[in-house]
Length: 118
Image (cartoon, rainbow, N blue to C red):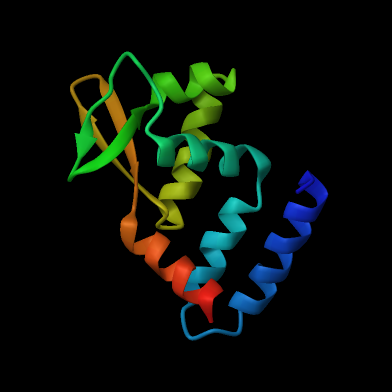
């Protein structure tokens, strides 16, 4: 699937989600419509990283520094995108010492899956 097709599909889902009973769903799709946020979300989902690999509540997680390294983005840019994903309810973050670990919010995945299944 090309990036344009992905963007169009996500844009359509955003419009459809506006009319559902769950207003958070629209915010989730809107957050994922950004190419960098979608890539970061996928990295968090996969639990990538070597330096700080842990689990949060049984879910694989990634350290912000690992995400920045994988994406080749400044940590401030990664932090901004993570804030948008967190505000949309797609990820949860936990600070441990000087490191911040992010994992997927399984409830958000359930909501998106239920919406897509109809």
